Image (cartoon, rainbow, N blue to C red; front, side, top):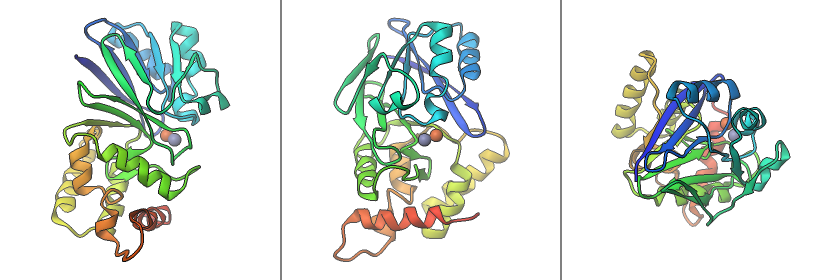
Length: 250
Ligand code: ZN
Ligand code: FE
C-alpha cells in the first residue's frame, strides 16, 4: 500500500492533512480545521475529495466539514460526538475499519481530550493520525476525560510499532519542549529539544514524529519513570505531569 500525505499549517497552530491512496486514487482529509486551507491544498495537489475523516468534535477539527462537503461532495466519517457540531455520513468507533481505496485504517478509541476522540491507524504504511491525543513531546489537555482514560489511550498509541509515523494536529512542540525540560533532565530530551528549537527558528515543522521518538522523550509517556509513585498506578504519575503542564507558563 502507498499512502501519500500532504501536510500544511493553518489557523494559528493547526496542521491540516490531505491524503491519497495511490493504488486507487481515493483521497481524504484528516479533520477540517480551515475549509479554505483544505480546499487550497486539494487544488494545489490536483485532487478531488472522497472522504473527510474526523478525529474529534472540536471546531478546529470539524468546523470546516459543512463547507468542504458542499464544495466536494465528500463523505464525512467520524466519531458520534462530531454530531454536536455537524452531521456525519458514517459514524465510527473503536475497532471499526475505514477503507480508503486499498488503504485500510483501523479506528483506535483514544478518549481523554474529548470522550469520543479516535485515531486513524494505517498498519500497512505505519501511519497514525492522532488528532489532539498525542503531540510531539506533549499530549492533549483533558477537556472531557479523566487522567486514567487518557493514560490508557496514550498506552494504546505507545503500543504501535516504534517506526509508526505520527501526524499530530498542532505545532505545539517548542512550548512542549520548554515544559518537558522542567520535568526530565535526561540527555535524550535535551538533544531533541535543541533540534526542535533550531527547526522552529528555521520555520520548519516538527510534525510528523514517531512512536519510538515519543516513547524515548515525551514526558507524558515517560511519566511513570519521571514521577515517583510507589504503590500508586502509573496513570497517577501521568496525572501529575499533566497537571504540571496545565499550570506551566513558559
Ligand atoms: Zn481538540
Ligand atoms: Fe485541536
